Structure formats: C-alpha cells, structure tokens
Image 1 (cartoon, rainbow, N blue to C red):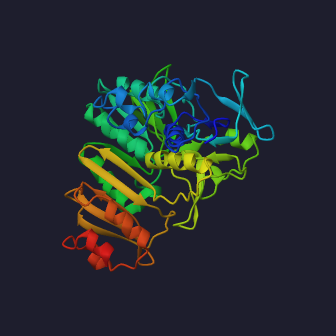
Image 2 (spheres, helix red, strand yellow):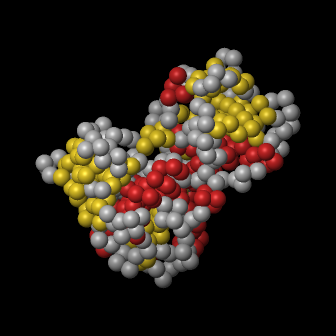
Image 3 (cartoon, rainbow, N blue to C red):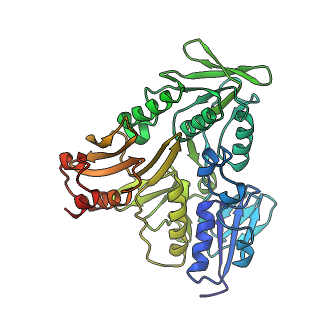
Length: 411
C-alpha cells in the first residue's frame, strides 16, 4: 500500500489505539499519527472501576499496547495535546500548540466525559468523578482507609465503585432519583436484582432521592438531598452518566445527534472522516437503527473496524453491543440492545437468589438481549447466536435449564 498517505487519529483511546493496530495489521505503510489529550499512552478503562481500583491489577496491565509498540510499528504517538480544529477543505487538524497535520483519512475517537453536577459545593475536595487513570488512583487512595462514602448515581460506574468501597471496608450509601439502579440499561426487573446484591453487602440504598448540593468547608462532609436532609460523607463519588465528546466534530460542521453520526462503515457525512467508540452514533443493520454504545467492547471492535474502513475495505459494523461487570461475587456479561421500554417480557433461566442465572429480554417473541450471572460454562456466545437469528422462541423452553442453550440456537 502507498507510503505517501497520512492517516490521523484524534483520541489516544482504546478505539484509537486499536484503529492504529488495525491499519498496520492490514498492511498500511503510510504515516499514522495518534493524538491524545491525556499524558498516558492508550489504556483500557474497565479496570479503573474494577481490578485497578481494588489494587488487584497492576498498572502495566491496563495499557492497550506495550510502551515500545508504537515506535516498533511506526505509529507517531503525540500525548498531552488536544486537537482544537479540523480544516475539512484543507484536510488538516490543528493542535493546541499551533501545529498542523495534514490527513488523507481522519478518525475521531475522542470518547466521552463524565456528566458533572451543577450544584452548590460541586468543587469541594473529596468529590470524585471517574474517567481517567489518575481519577482511579486518587479514588483508591481516598477509599482504601475506609470511612463514609456516598455514591451519587447507580449506573455501572456507581455500582462498581460502591462495591469497591465496600471491599475496602467503607460505609456506603447510594443516592439515585429513580426507584431502581440500571433502569435504562436493564429495565426494572434486573435493576432490582442488582439493588438486592448491594443490599446484601450492606449498602444503604436511598432511591427516589435527588441531590441538591455538597456541604463542607473546603472539603466535603455531607451530601444535601431534596428531602431537606443531609447524608454524612468523607468521600463522594458522582456517577451520573457521560456525554460524548462531540465539540470538535460540531465545530467542523459534521452531523452530530447523540454523538457523531456515522453509517454502518463508521464513516461520517464527510467521506474522509470516520468516528468510532463512545462518540459514534452508528447505524446498526441488525437492529435497523442508530445505536451509540459506551462500553469497552465497542471501543475495541469499533477501532479495529474503523481501521479497515479507512483503507477502503467493505466494512459493515454490526457487532452486538456487549458489556460486563464484576461486583462482589457477581460476574455478569450482557449482550444485545433494546430501547427504553422496548421489550415485552423478561425470562429468567436459573435462580436469582443463588446468583446463577440467565435473563432474556423478549420483544415480539424474539430474544433482543440477554445477560448471564455467574454462568460461565455456557457464557454469552450461544445467546448472541440466538439474538442474531431473530427466531421466535418458546419462553418455557428458554426458561428450562435442562435444555442447553446451544440446542435452542439449533432449533
């Protein structure tokens, strides 16, 4: 392949690093420039709220590639710099130090940022958000000695950090306006299961309660709630979702709607610009709609696919959304997708109380999503085949653990 082309990747993330890897593995011999705002080389984020936060995983294990990989593969890794603008007509990007890089193809993988609470006391010491490696290190230092921790939000970050804080011996309270955790991701049925998991581990769950501010003099000492009360806190963790980093794309005039709009090949409305990872609102042919996925597997697989698409390969990115979590003694894998309220029923196969089961979300008699808890023998693979098949399924057979999942797929 030509050595004269330059491919620029904005975002030294998992998606960006995997795209660079894909370009080299597919034989691209041109210039590859990978630009990141952080000073750390690309790393994976799941350990930040799991093993690395708990001190069970070494720092070296979180990186996407060994330190020497970038030089060995002639990938120019520019860290600690933001791209401030895209000149689409001139096919150039501009950095915060004034440098410009021309591109033949451009990939945007800037990821997402935590949504921040705009309330009194939001800037007090002891209020933590978790997104970057340094955030995890600071939070670990804050909770490793125990104390009172209030978690605002009950999504994946909120629940995983709550579990970590309990493992460190902290008193933990979770505050959330909705009646169950994970309602948008799993619906009320399985959200209730995760609420029970945390109750069994001694977490004080305050659902139906909003936060009006943080109280303290320089350092947080309590969380103010909308019932007029205060919850004492030595540490506050805010996990109320993320927003895609679309500002650069917006300034460049690219189509943006709940992320950067891309087709099934991860191409934007500019034929020379692509987007992948958290920021990409991609058309998924399997579901016939656009989906923006904020999880590890999408960054990994989307980056690999984007690299191939930039090379002109016929790419259709139709991966099933997938994510996993580890909380206490619960290990879970989820695959599939449904819009909020976009299912008819949930079928459980196994025992909820024993924390060993599969759950299936059905719409129109078809499985659209599934998760398993501690069911590692069968795992998630057969379920993904079942979802892809689009087959009508008998709920009674689906719920019967004596029928192997593989047999249901064959049927």
